[in-house]
Image 1 (cartoon, rainbow, N blue to C red):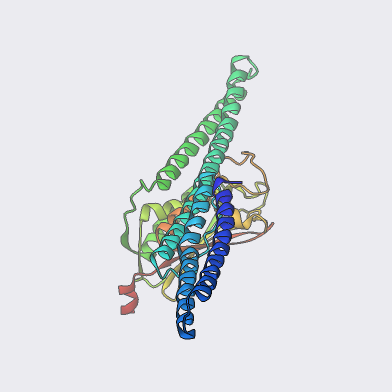
Image 2: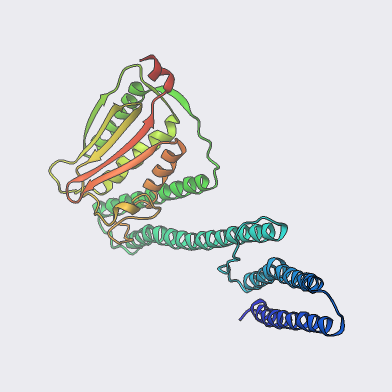
Length: 359
């Protein structure tokens, strides 16, 4: 039991005794006056009234000043013990003591919130370190194994050596991309990446993006479909480099989880106007996302299926970076997916209002 609570109990006992003693003293004074002084009834009533007023005043002082101070003392003792759940009861802070209690309670709530956020941040940091260690250890182990295979003569043919070297190269690229994404995420976390927003023609911007996507997807054996139903004069304000990163991250993530043995793998980009918004749809015919995983797809390091395996590569923060960039644009992102059929990601970006007014 904190010291403040013990003191509070002792004070309550003392207060009760004091109130009883005060009442006895008042009663004795009244009896003494009545017995020793021949006073008129109205004089007796006056004296009784004065004494009762005194008693009520003492009681009021204890209730409005002393009790709140004792409660504050108890709350301070609880906080000193690390317990931030003890609440100081406040009605209306209509005097200095009430205002003091009100301010103290606000301080306690802020301190509790700050402590909770600190613990949550520490937990996230621990998770971050564990995940980074896991994600870097997997390709490193693979590289080490293939290098040892070459050194020990396991790769005893030129064809086998080439395959080993190619795998080492791919794993090295995977690690480099992972470190780049982690560095980017860290900078975003501390607001070290400036966004360069520009007013850009919607149709022209996405046409250039589609041309780049077509080249990338052809190399990977994925069919690309593009459709843009936007007025040729429509504009929006974006950071072109960061929005391109969003599109590339979503495309990379889609390909990563497509069925490699599917007859035709397809990635689609569709742009259209919805009232005063530009709606960007990025979809695929991949394996989809299960319903239980949907709320977590934008969390860092989340890969779904309750697994942390890195068979598909990547750091697991690609979509988390996407969410951060979209939030920085003041835009919205949604996801819809059917397990075994594919996924659609919707990004809603505001049109430039000047253009919208002239239409």
